[in-house]
Amino acid sequence: MSQAASRSSRSIGIDLGGTKIEIAVLDDNSKLVEHIHMATGPAGEAEHTLRELIDALREKFPAGSPPVAVGVGVAGQIDPGTGVVQFAPNLRWRHVPLRAPLERALAVPVKIMNDVHAATYGEWRYGAGRGADDIICLLVGTGIGGGVVSGGRFLMGHSGSAGELGHMTIDLAGPTCSCGNRGCLEAFAGGWAIAELARRRMQAEPGTGELIRRLTDGDPAVITAQVVSEAAARGDSLALSLQTVAGRALGVGIANMLNAFNPERVILGGGVMAGMPQLLAIAEREARSRALKAPLRDIAILKAELGPLAGAIGAAARARDLIRGAA
Ligand SMILES: [Zn+2]
Image 1 (cartoon, rainbow, N blue to C red):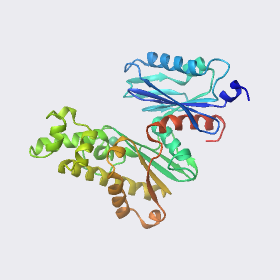
Image 2 (tube, rainbow, N blue to C red):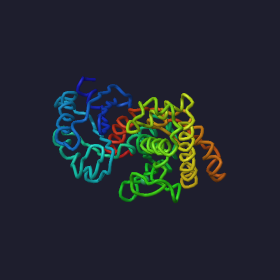
Image 3 (cartoon, rainbow, N blue to C red):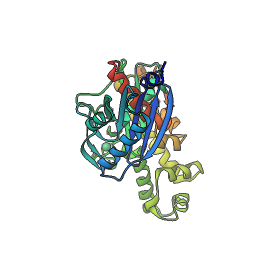
């Protein structure tokens, strides 16, 4: 097989985040053959980021050996039909056409998707969801996103936004969420919320969170979920109680999802899950104590397997499968 022919069976996935871009190159057997890491251009400057991305891809795939498909996962609201990024808060992009300029520059079919949908697809096809027809993937990072595969179909919903599992209400009177609603799952267990709850508790009870205070030199502005995780690992009682709150909230959310979708596996990934290893067990205990009997039969609640490259791998696989009519 010639070099050009072997290259042209590859597909590319791009995970476009607020500060970094991960690019995964998959061969025809879906094996990850290359990984490129780039910094995202300045926020709000879509043209700059797009130009650098196109340059990097052209260098990798010179004319004459294009990949079969390019998939791009973006954190934000996407119109999958037009390939326009409607709103990506981390990138500060509004109404940015992404598919058209990429297709024009690369002469390759391009699919634009939500980044969490891409990661869910990756976990489904090649990670902890392999071989299952009914999975729910929950990615707990700064925010909480999700994806649902039901009966072997990846659920997009009527307008492409299915899977916003972080914004299910779990407490009528709970704290205000980034979306404006009260009591969302994300407002208890998202990374920003864990940091915010730590700040509030330390302000209300000055004697608590001693280790968090020490780790941040007494500056509440620099408290992050990562700091809380570290303090929890070292036994700080406030950090441990926030971990319990986040874990139980996740468990309540998972119980709702089990009742609604009756999945075979629930897969938990994202930076907060990685930083707080106890979270999964706390969430599982809570979910098992609340869900109905039928959906609990045979359920497996598992850690995600693909790590930070799930989005890029999933974007490549989903774009390729969509183009082949297999997704
Ligand atoms: Zn919300």
